[in-house]
Structures are given as C-alpha cells and as structure tokens.
Image (cartoon, helix red, strand yellow):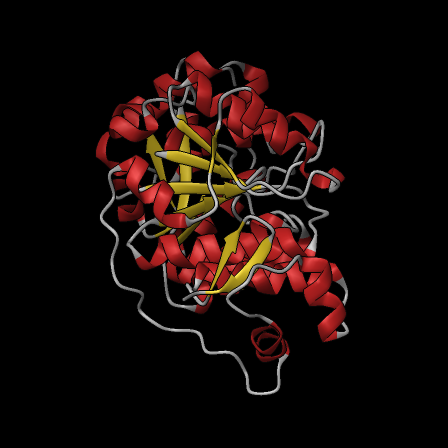
Length: 333
C-alpha cells in the first residue's frame, strides 16, 4: 500500500506497535481495496507474526522521536535493543571491495568510538560495513545494522550469523516489511535511513560512484556532520572519499576528532591491544625509529606488502604507539 495509507494504518495501532492477530486486524479495515485484501494472505502474514513472537517490533511514525523524525518513512521494523535509538549514533560506511588499509581503519574507528559509548550504525554489507560491525561486536559494544530488506531476510546470505549476533546484543532496523527481498532502489532507501538516524557519518573508503557516497550526501542535506578517512592519492578506492573532502567534508585521521566535533566525551579504552611477540606489529615497531620513515621503506624492512604495512600502521597509530609525521611514520617519543 502507499505511504499515506500505510501511515494511517500504523497510527491506528497506537502503542501496540504490531497487531497480535494481523489477519483479523487487516480484514476489518474499511480503507483497504480488494486487491490489497487479496495480497494479505496467511502466508504473507506468517513471517511477520513469527518475527513478532520472537521479539521483533514495529514503530509507527507517530512514535519516532527526534532522531527518526528526520526520515520520511511511515514506520520502521526493529529486532533487538530499541534503546540504542536514544543514544549517540555514528554511521561507518564504505565500499564492499575494501582494501586492507580501509578495513583496518574501519575497525579501529569503530572500536574507539564504541569505547566512548557510541552505537556504530552501518548497512550490513560486505567490506567496510562488516568490518565496523565485527569490530564492535568483538569488544562487546553496541552496533546497529540497517537492512535493505525485511529483517528476516539475510542479505548478503553469508552474513546471516552476523545478523543473528547483532540482533542478540544490538539492533537490526529496516523500513521494509518481513519477507521483503532487496531491490536496486532498496539500497538507496536504506542509505537515507542510515543518514537520518545517525548523528554523524564516517566514510572510510569510497571509490567514485560508490553507493556509500549517497549516505554522505543524505547526511549533508540533513545538516549532519560528514567525516572522511583519507588515504594515499594513488589508491583509486578512495577517489570518492577525497571528492567529499574537496566538497567540504571533514578530514579525520583519529576517532577523537569525531568525538570532539559531535560533543561526545571520550572515555578511557575498555581494553588495550598489545602486539603479538614476533607478529607484524612487533616487526614494524623494531623497524621504526623516532625519525619518520615512509610506509614503503618500512614494508621493505619487514618483508611485507605495503598494503598490509599501512593497515598495521593505522592500527598502531590509533592505539597511540606510532605517530604520522611529515615524511612517514615514527615511534611516539
């Protein structure tokens, strides 16, 4: 049904949020056409009923609150901790075909922001999205996945275990009813919802014409802060990201900059990462001095590819072990 009629239906639910007997509820509505009644079969409602019994819920627009009021959808479906919508939320999004450097940056920003009580929102996609979700779950933080389909549909299918974990300790959210499969337009609509519910958006790695750029554009239209992680100018996967910076998005190279801009108090980290003795981090630290060295020189000293070295340097930098200076990277004095 159309958005106007759907909003009327959702408003009539009041505080219930979802009908306990969907079939009876819809059968007695006088504003439905015969075609709409025909579509409301037992099979189409069973998925919604099963999900509702398992803990899923529906929030009509009349009960959205300030954050979701930025969205134009008539209702949202949720599965998990609804209170996450009341606290600070930062979206971390980017390309599915992420580089090692991009995945590492997404991981470390997600961990640091989560340590300060921020819920990390993303779209559940491969690449940057999954890296952000996984990093938060690994340390026991809170994450929110906005789906381009019904909450009982795993897309991509390989992420079903990830969605199950998010549902148990975080929140799955969608504007699409249970059982609805994703369409091409669904991803843009999903991105609008991510932008609407977030206090700020971090673009980690986005090539030209990346779908994740639409999250940044929607956020900017709503007056939200847009942050971008930069990279080497030769990395094509960041050309869309760098275009955002040229358009006025804020370049960030540390999570504290996001916390400061959003007025969120930084909390001490709940855990400390220590390099594995003999691992790549240890090799890098042995190769570093207080004098800056290029990533290429460090990679040659460690006998590793530059991409892997850059990823590990990003982690060490965000942990405060190394610093980035003119000329490359150096040990923190």
